[in-house]
Image (cartoon, rainbow over all chains, first blue to last red; front, side):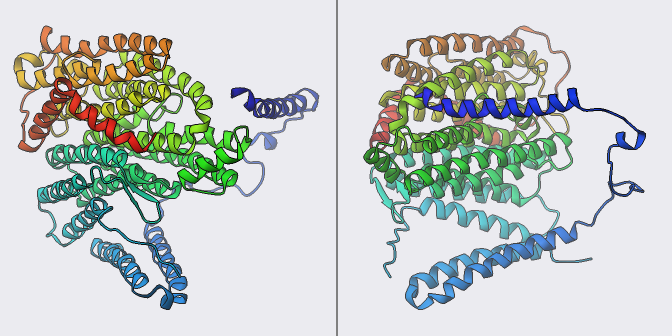
Length: 118
Length: 483
């Protein structure tokens, strides 16, 4: 029943109380000596120069994503290869279907031009 | 090593959908560039139709396969039929809508097929990982589909919003599954139920946590309050055909997984989730209906109305009896027809670069396009729950289930909500027939495919309203294995 959730409610209440208490206490008790540097949005690190919203070539992302995809495929091949003999025909056909699906994906990205660098 | 038995007939519909999805992708990339690709839609339609005819022989077999991970029981079959009907109508709409809005990619049709596959898997999974895989296949396809209008900022925004919030909600669902596994040591729904029963784990905190997380995860997919925030923005921004698909298909699949997980794995916790779902159902109905009143965009209005409909369905879920559960199945079928029909009308009223989705655009439509206005009226009245339309019977079953289970207040609140909803549905009708048009809407083209979808939706809405007993008795037989 709902009463069983009471400990969770207590836990949430304590968490909220503690968070509020900590912020409030430091707000009331702490001393403040603001300087211009302290009030800057980023206190540390180097100043940025130029706009940070630059265009980045998307090619890297596509190649990285596709690499990941086909890399995982190889990961699946290892355990299959280890017990290939025990799995017999069943394993072979299952894996053939799996690879066929990935080959379709490969043909698709190839024809779409995702592998062309220029 | 003992290898599992493979019965490919059980997953024949899923295999066909997948194969056609790949076929569409391959045909698309090998087709000469720059031509109109209407035939891809026809190819997808063919796939859905074949899958449908491979689903029908499975009715009544009640088999399970793949080490009991996958069920072809009545419950799954009923949902598969509903989902395939939804996919069929969506594709019909898309054949007219996608080229008009410049969605010339074959991926569009392939993704609809993959999403359909995911929904079917969700309905059929009896193992939590299968259900989760289905959910993810569906969700990822839909995230992309929502952003298909690449040049349109609203579409991109809706895809991004849906992706971020959806991924977050999926995290909750997965967390819930993990807790469930941690507490019971199994991911099979049946084993979870028997373990809870044998060890008397009713006060296990991990199970209670997982119950809460599962409610959040599924609640997001079916757009129940308070997990509904994404709905209006996503429904408004996404291409209208995708919105129709989301409002019907995702909801149906979400409810199928919710029902199966809660009724099969966690029936022992029924007192717990009844009290939570009672609140969620009332909040969902009331919130959806009241906000829908103040909308001036028809897509947003239908989005809030879809939230409200999730609330009505939850009423039957709370009732938790046989009538309620078969009522949910019936409701989702009826909702699929009337909602897809309404969205088809919205699509037919627009043209390239001019969507005409403001409610005031509907003023005077009854004189200029009498048939379109009449069908829109039928769908809106059905959603409002006016006999003799499908929506009325659906609501009748849902509320009578609540009465039968002695949730009188819930039924009363549902009926009050239903009465509120009549206002905003009728407002559109009144505008169509009793107001002068505010501006000229001309040059609408009624291409054959969406018109056919409209006719099918009309037939479905009337059929479920006038002869409900056929479908209801089928639904009642379908849930036999579930409860």
